[in-house]
Image 1: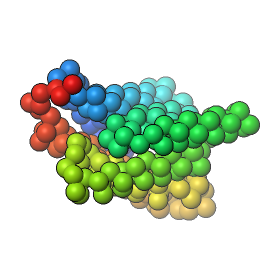
Image 2: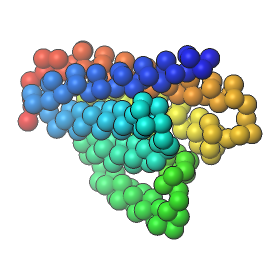
Image 3: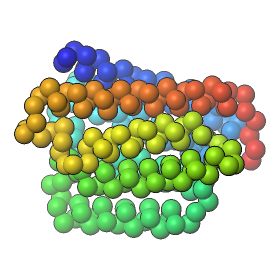
Amino acid sequence: MKEFTSFLGDLAIYISPIVAIIYLISFIRNDKIYKVFTIYLIAMALVQISSHYVGRGGLNKTNLYFSHIFYISQFIILSIFYLKLLSKKIIVYLLLIVLLLISIQFINDPSIFFRYNPIGMSFTQIILVVYSIIYLYKSLTNKGEFVIVNIGILIYLLSSTLIFASGNLVLDLNISKETRLVLVNVNRMLSIIFQILVFIEWYRNYRIRVSRN
């Protein structure tokens, strides 16, 4: 089981930069929404590779603080992504409010930087899930861009939130090691499925797309 968990973790990490590079190839000839999503893929790939190197890939040091970089960067970039897709100014206001609240949280308790932050992670992901649901509903009547990616975001973030929202669930010593491994495996498998859907989106709609800007 441990070997399988490590394999899934490594696979998810290695796939992410490959998909980011694929999107980067078509970066110039596609529109602003595509460019924002490509920046998201690149940022997430860099965070995951750096976290892997610090944690297991070479330094063997604690890398939990990368989780904060991950969910905050994810929230910022995907908020901009959905701002472009939905054209709702409230997304800007929510982005600023949530970033302010997270900043206050870190100022009041700087040690949280070295701990898992279930409140910050869950809250930002729930907001992104709401954006995803709204865009999914919108795309049912008016076909838009990144429909496949949006479904992937919805599945991955909703499932991830359910796994981690109850606190330090995966890190909780009150649950068995086997249960923690199952939850980790599910989350990593969902990450891989998300990357596959991202690739399918590119392959079907953006390989030869001409920029509309």
